[in-house]
Amino acid sequence: MSRFQKIAEKLDEHGLDAMMVTSAPNRMYAAQFRSSAGMAIITRDGSYFFTDSRYIEAARKAVTGAEIGQNTTDKPLSALANEVIAKHGIKRLGFEEQYATVGEYNTWKEKLTCEELVPAAQLLTNLRAVKDQSELDALIAAQRIAEKALQEVLEFIKPGRTEKEISAFLQYRMLSNGAERMSFEPIVVSGVNSSMPHGVPSEKPVEDGDFLTMDFGCMLEGYCSDMTRTVAIGHVTEEMDKVYHTVLAAQEAGIAAARAGVKGMEIHAAAAKVIGDAGYGDYFGHGFGHGLGIEVHENPGAGAKASVPLPVNAVISAEPGIYLPGRFGVRIEDVLILQEGGCLDIMQAPKELLILK
Image 1 (cartoon, rainbow, N blue to C red):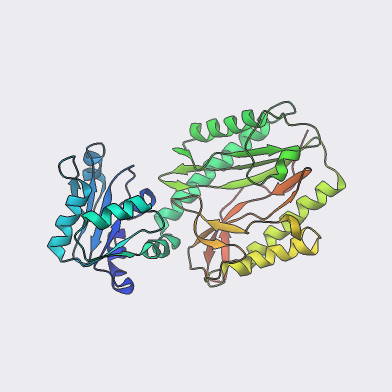
Image 2: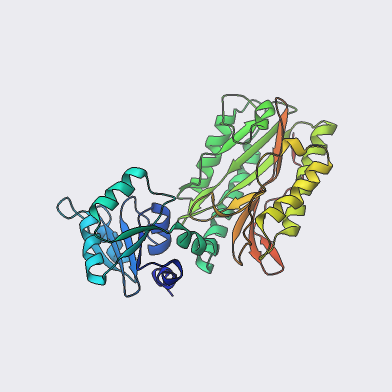
């Protein structure tokens, strides 16, 4: 079954005559084709994919299960959409309220001839939460590229290298190993900077006695990898060792709790309890994990307020951390595929504390 058909099957459940898809991530999901512009409209009786002259030739070759059309200056997307609305008698047209700007919504409301624009982003969110095998294969392949880059960067790191240099090396190695682009700008922070969960790589050189946290990932076939490893330079103190192994134990507790059917908040609670019991509860301020797929942060989540049961083949990160302001921080991140009765950790990179000499 094509993804257009999967969307069409959900129209009745959401009270829609058709679904309009305009965001890049959801267009990628529906059409399995990447472009910076375009629109898909899915009805019960057929699907349509519109794009401009930059992508039309490629779309005609790559997109299946939909009628392909080209928008132009004289015939914009709104005109093409109105043709579909008229042809299928569409009254209630779903749109992605999570992605649309106020300006875009007002433009559609003014120009489209359907009776009602209905917020329906949840339709796509729910479908994307359950990965098919081709998506899982792409995620795993992207993860292997990131893991290979980790092995390579460990040989590159030494005192005196700056955070920016290490970040640049990671990106170069991922691209050299086959990545299409980065999932996000790498987070490479050391020493006192490592207490900032989303710190920006700086000119600070890594030094003996530092923790170095590297959070990075790449894209392959439109899907993201994401991983974090914290390593030590030269030596660690007793407290650094304690914090590292507390984070590792918290991650293991969360992974043990992760399975299809549980709520994300339950997974988070299992990890947070370990950190709290060790006396560091005030220094774990984010969720245990987030969804991963076409976007590096997507649904479903595994945070303190994630109250929706997680489906089979949902993919989430497993990334607890402890951050002591002005001192140091530790985060360890793997990626999990949720299954009945447990989960599959797709990460192969080691997690024991590495002290680089």
